[in-house]
Length: 281
Image (tube, rainbow, N blue to C red):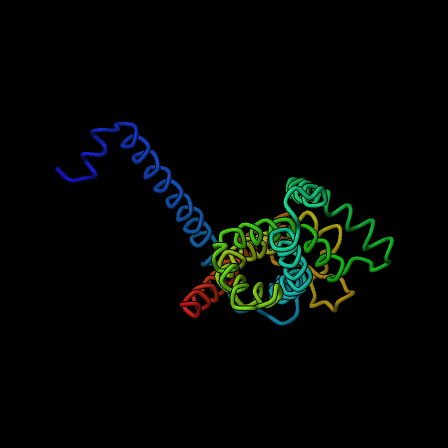
């Protein structure tokens, strides 16, 4: 009898939980492939060159402006949110004293922000960025709104990644005479980088799939926008096509491109994380 079977015989509940875990994993993987397969089957037959025309018209329903706008939105939002989130987490883990009331307030606000519906972010962005700052419906207003939306996610994931780095790394660095700043950037951040990138991957997924907040801040104009021009992302493009009811086939094709875009961005971020992990070794 194997060691595993002996363990299960001595602790029957371990076998029960093992079976439940495997069932849950199987169901999760099955749901993923079901969604991906359904989207591909419904959308791939309607992919055609006209959908990738440089300019959108009511006849071709091109998604190319939306694709470019999506990448611009992701880039600008992460450019704002990632540094703020990472540095905020560094303060919480490396600089703030234990029991600090400010830390408790920061954690309370980040947890509260994580639970706010996206439509509320959209209304805030509309009132503050669009109306108060007079940015109008624009790429910049949408990106700033999304940056605020994903900031709590990046803070929490970075904080957990930094906490996972063993304190012996820090103590060894201090023992060799390194300063606080050098220890953080040379010793602590590299091992935590894969965890930080995991949070950024989740943030990318939320940015790419967001619609409610962007309708109120970025608008739905189907063109390649400047920083202060209105534009639509792939998610809004798909919503607009399906809402009109005139281009359902094109909406299905857009769903395929949106899914592939998310998978490519996640794959790229995962590849960077693996490269960094190998570099540490």
